[in-house]
Structure formats: C-alpha cells, structure tokens
Length: 288
Image (cartoon, rainbow, N blue to C red):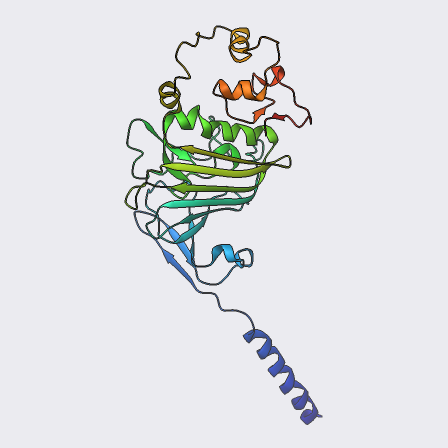
C-alpha cells in the first residue's frame, strides 16, 4: 500500500513543480533619489504587451512628484487613479508623445481634489517654467484626469494655456463628456530645450475626429501681428460680439465668418457663439 502511494505522489509532485516553473519571474528595482522617485518594472505587464511600448523603459512616477527631471526613452502612466494615460520621452528626455484610449473626466464627487479643482497643490518644475510668461502646462489637464509630474507638464505660454488653443481644446473635451483615441505630439526647436515649439492634438469626440495644431506662443500677439485685432471695437456685450462676427448682418453666424473673426473650430454648445450658428447634426458642435 505504501509503495502505491509513493508512485502516485511522485508524478504529482513533478506536475506541481512544473506548474510552478511556468510562472514568469518578476524583477523589480526600486530607486529613490531626491530628484525623482521611480519604480522600474522589468517584467512585461499584460496591458503593455502591444507595440506602442517597444523600446521604452516603463517607470512609475508619483503623480504629484515636483521634480522636473525626466528619464530618457521612458513611458509613464500619467492618468490619475485607474486611468491609463501614457507619456513617452525621447532619447533627450523631452516629452514628445502622450496617448490615451479614453479620456475620463475628473469626478469631483468621488475623487480627492483641491478647492480649485486640482489633484495636487503644485506641478513639476520642468526646466523653463521659471520664465514669467510660461505656465506649468498640463498636456492632459486635471479636469481631464491628468497628474502633475514632469511627464505631463511642459513650459507653455501662459495666454495659450489659460485662454488660447490649449484651453479651448480642453473645453471641447469637457463639453463632450470625454474623448477617445487621444494623442498629443510635442515638438521642440532643438534637443537641448524642454520648452516645446509646437503641439498637435488628435482626439475623437462624439464620433468626430479633431486635429488641433498650434505653436507655443502668445495667441493674442499672433492675432495682433496678423491684423485680426486692429480696428476691432471693444466688446461691451454679446450683441456687439455677434455683430462683429456676423459680417453680413443676417443674424446667423457661419463657420467661415467665425473663422475670419479668429475663432477656432469647432464651436461647442458652451461657447457664446453657438446659439447664433447652425448645428445641423445636433451633436453640440459646429465646424467639426
């Protein structure tokens, strides 16, 4: 009887041992430094097995890390909470690409945010943000679920960030309740600077693909140089604004009229011009 049990136990032990050896080994290196705290994972993670991450070293950086340093050829998740937003750096440590399959808006009721709607009290001090006319600009804003470390921050013109194309892009996504297939491509004049020269955002809202490209400059100064602000009457109320845009005076603002007046498309339902334009498909956007 004992001999029969021995024969049964031996192959069973081989089976269990073989099962254990099929598990993939995981090696994790933890690095703590005054500049930046990172966790480097050398084993592949199921969500990262596609080609988008090939050639990049995945590191984890705390969302509120204020260090302005970035590791070269790195990919970092910059989505707050469970969001998967991925930021990529080039061989010079410049932030060059940010992608997200889905942009999930900030949830003030369920997420811990400050009184001014931010996840963190301050942003990373990327080289260049010390300039008085540059903001610590989020590639994906707090309101869209982005964190505040150096992999989501670039030195961005203050007017552009607060009132220009960057702010308008964020407003479009918020108004639509989110976006899909988000991609930001960031370019620089040279390999030494951390101040971008241009941004290109591509994203889908309500089935419409939007591509928005703009330089990292003060849009008010550009409009003035182009003569778009010369001779324009100071707006005192909404009717004055409409009459300025509605050049033929028929009470209906066309897409071309809005563009000629310096407005960027699309015009969304929260824009003051929207009630004066025709939204033929009723999707809350005109000129998409």
